[in-house]
Image 1 (cartoon, rainbow, N blue to C red):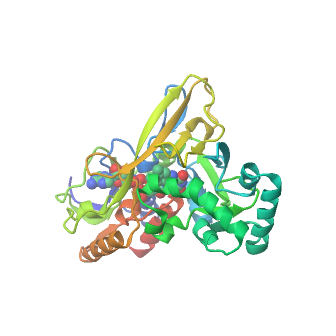
Image 2 (cartoon, rainbow, N blue to C red):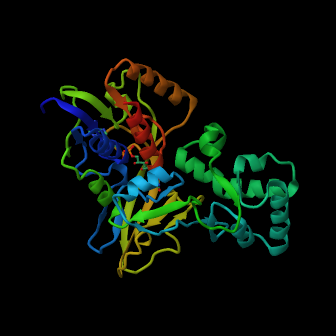
Image 3 (tube, rainbow, N blue to C red):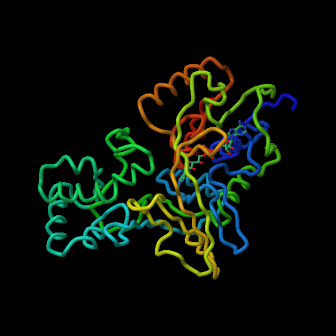
Length: 367
Ligand SMILES: Cc1cc2nc3c(=O)[nH]c(=O)nc-3n(C[C@H](O)[C@H](O)[C@H](O)COP(=O)(O)OP(=O)(O)OC[C@H]3O[C@@H](n4cnc5c(N)ncnc54)[C@H](O)[C@@H]3O)c2cc1C
């Protein structure tokens, strides 16, 4: 490959957003490569034989309150106005997740549910999200009863399965995210802008990269021999430095895709199984774009440890040790002029899609 002005590693949302910004606003050329044989990175989706849009790396729902991000991505797609709802098998019933006032009334007898609801409203107010660990700290007997119920039936085993550790051993930035929602709103997200790209995420990213000054090279692994004026790297930062300080830990997921000969498998796009099973959740894909078929496809998610060469990196493990190690890689990165890291793997940070786009916007402003 001859010397390129801008080399971007990774055709996911991060790399694709940056590529588009550079060609559009700087009028410079970009070569974007990916080790995979497809674009869109972790958000890649495709239509199967039944016309159902499958998310290869697990269910993805676009949601944001960031208007500039929404406006940018909406230039490349129309949206199916999907609003995400999740249910969880709790005490033998499928209840809305996050646990909310509807869930409360489903699992408890009326008088008890009414009493707890009043306490929640008095203590926190309506439409508030309260992290479970915070609820556990109150000294009201009804609220601690509720906190203990949710902790045991939803939070504890789910966390053990998902992360392989107890909630107490995790960074509160992750464990604190799981709330109880004092509301009757059953949606998983309350963001102003939500939806699924009508042509899928792959279609969206394809349009983003569709520009005469963007050259895409798939099935191409980054090598130090490649020549560039500037490199933007959205692959794993530890891999870039050949793991010289050690490996950054990740959690992975094994997705088991199953096809069933009936039109619907379950009563929501995603059902969580906090207890009893080895899988954490089942996603059913036809919900997202309302695909019609007399067959249906679901994926069972089995969390597992990430091992290089065995499976994919999914979630960074947010712990003090891993953050310290990442900071050391960041120091190394500061000594590499004209090389910039971004994205969930480059920044070693969980980003929703909108935050990955925002991060690419911010990096673009820096260069
Ligand atoms: C299970 C799961 C569910 C999610 N659900 C949602 C959701 O519902 N809503 C939401 O907003 N976000 C969701 N996300 C987050 C979303 O996937 C990320 O925001 C998004 O993938 C970030 O894009 P990225 O470009 O930073 O990373 P990626 O999409 O991972 O792109 C990085 C690319 O770099 C390539 N690469 C790596 N190393 C090299 C190399 N050496 N040479 C060449 N190429 C390389 C990789 O192949 C990859 O394609 C979810 C994430 C996970 C794990």
